[in-house]
Image (spheres, rainbow over the protein chains, first blue to last red):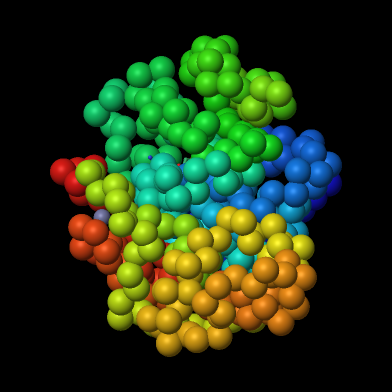
Length: 214
Length: 123
Ligand SMILES: C[S@@+](CC[C@H](N)C(=O)[O-])C[C@H]1O[C@@H](n2cnc3c(N)ncnc32)[C@H](O)[C@@H]1O
Ligand SMILES: [Zn+2]
């Protein structure tokens, strides 16, 4: 088992402002652990985590890939999360560049077709639409109708960003209608699989994996 | 943010679609920080860097070590790879501004983090 990243620099009060790693985060880590040999074989030159929050997932993936093998980029809409990700990278001796932005704004079209590994644990909780679009901690969970509003906004970018060999991983819950998401992605030219699922309290979590159809 | 990441950023103001890259660095504070050199990684990156933009950006920062054109043997030119490594992976932008050459929009860099967020009406 790979060690969980060191987050000891983040304190209780930090988690008032940024997402504290929870069951979804840990299931994501478990999924990446399952994918270790695949990821090493993939040998991504550029990776991108959308919505990195504490930076826990990127620190974990960074350890799998190795410090110097990959340009590790992250984005988050929450400025405090951006700073937390930066701190977590440092704490775990990794170089990560974090961009404060909405989804992947500011790197397209420049990075179109150049990202080999991308992953997103999105705000997936069902909330009123008005709650979507915050720049503070609510952005971590508020997903609007069916918890799909941020996911649906992001999906069209995936085919633009990923390189021919690129892979995309995403956390979803049952209420997000994973089959429907997979169907939409299929129309965009991606085949999908479920890397992990887990029942966490009332949430049924899935880790979906997408690669371009051969 | 390292210079390599600056080489990936582009203005995304609504309607600003041409001549919007690279963003011009102004009033920047730079810092050098040593990093492990990985030639395989650099080779993988050669095709993903916009080299001309990189050189132009460097010249404005008084970083004059990169050749104007990428050497034909870049992938196996140790001296070149070392310079490239130092410039794109060891040079950090701690603060400053990035100005779009087309629409003049200013993106701030604070605490080493570029802020690419736009106000509602600019999207
Ligand atoms: C469920 S949290 C996941 C955080 C972290 N990756 C983890 O797994 O613990 C979702 C993250 O996405 C960020 N986020 C939400 N909407 C976003 C958007 N439109 N663009 C970028 N980041 C966003 C939130 O600020 C939050 O950090
Ligand atoms: Zn512009």
